[in-house]
Image (tube, rainbow, N blue to C red):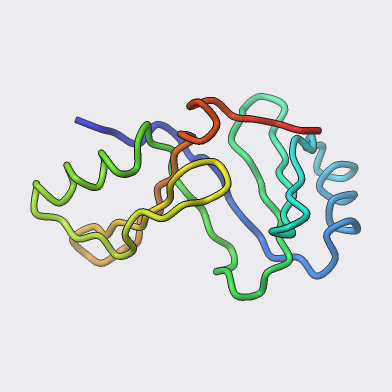
Length: 126
């Protein structure tokens, strides 16, 4: 059975990426590990964890949002459906792999993501 591995990331909308990046680095002590200029996103990690805080400049994304890491989104969704559960958003391509949104029995949305495009390991470019 697939399982949720950890909280992969929490994302926040910011009005100015570079001003916000200085805050997350200098005030909160996070380390910038990647920047995606095309998607207008910057990723940070904690000193004692590789879970990420991601800031973005896309007002169409939910704010805040989060995702749970799984080994393989598509495989997870297949097993999830076989057990009679509902998928809110089918797997789609994202920067690091695949992303989908599942629902629990009360309708709570559970976003999942994998790192299949990165060889199943975080990839940092900073």
